[in-house]
Length: 531
Image (cartoon, rainbow, N blue to C red; front, side, top):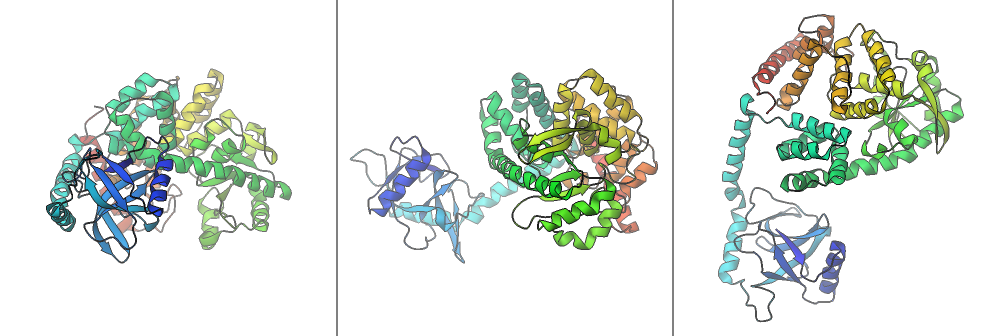
């Protein structure tokens, strides 16, 4: 339940500051009730009179605190070890733990309305009922939690399971194509909590928030999704803004060393100040260097205080199993740097993706620290397609779709020719481009094997996360066009470079992957098709 200041102050922060000021002058500020989470005792149009919080609140007190720019009045249900638990009387399943710094005041009295002759309603019976609500919160929450568990179990049945990933695909496709009507249609038919969780998992939070701002859809679904994603979206944009100065520092450090290098992915977008670059937060910066200059690049960053931290012991493993050195972290706050010698792990693709192979795809880009090399549109698209193999993060596919949408047919034909020459993982690489092309609404040659793989991916991303993360058996099966090949074994083998962190081979681990993969495949095939 929210309590909003009765005086017509447009700025919420100004209203909160005014309430705090009145409490500091020993005045008795009044707040009008809004919302329903404190029913049945508190409701509109009741008015709360506040007093300062001079000591730790007691169980049963109604505490007013600040939460994301608004005032909230909830009952104290527990105080232990300096931690205050609060909860709305009508929402016993959802307690909060506000920090002391957010406390604004404590409810002193409750009036029936804001009329001058309004009577007080906080009688002795009122306080007894409040104390009972506070002491029985956990007990009253049991029916709600049991209902939620039953609903969760029912939704876990394959043929009843929601398909939020398909809804997210439709929303992202509408975003890429700038189609507000398709966006609203996809939004209205989606399950909002599941959609918000899927968007966060696939790194699409900031892009989805930007689409909500651009298209301005109305209704409960849009409001719920906007509120659910807002905090994560703000964090992504703030991180990207901080990253702009960090990538300039990396460019300066490598530039002084004389080592040739090219910025990749998010680092290139930020440095070149591309439109929408701040919507795609990166956890690190990727930089491509010639293999024989890798040690020189590492030394240049170490001179500026960068270090490998906990990855120092794994340095040799990175050099053997990865296409980049161990991440180098800045001396203070900032982003790690991954120095790449290629765009794919050794042995995972037959296509040459090192410095020499990509040198003709590099173009100069001006930025705050001077001119640097970045991949051109075809090179960037190829990198995004490689990075999107497996389609585990929809954000990569959306970025590729946006790029394919502005490329010429000749450029797309050149990419298709490059994909057609791949010999190790052609199907999944082709699926990356086919999927992104469908998002963008541009033509791309496809085939039955790619369609089957994309159908599997759509199902895999909607199965329970435990099985989705252990579906290597089915992944290898579809990646090899429903055959068991060397690629399937690579996907299944824990020692394979296809794993993010290669681990020692264990037949117990492999057998566990086989069993979990079989369960994931059976579950996925039992799910309903697109609703």
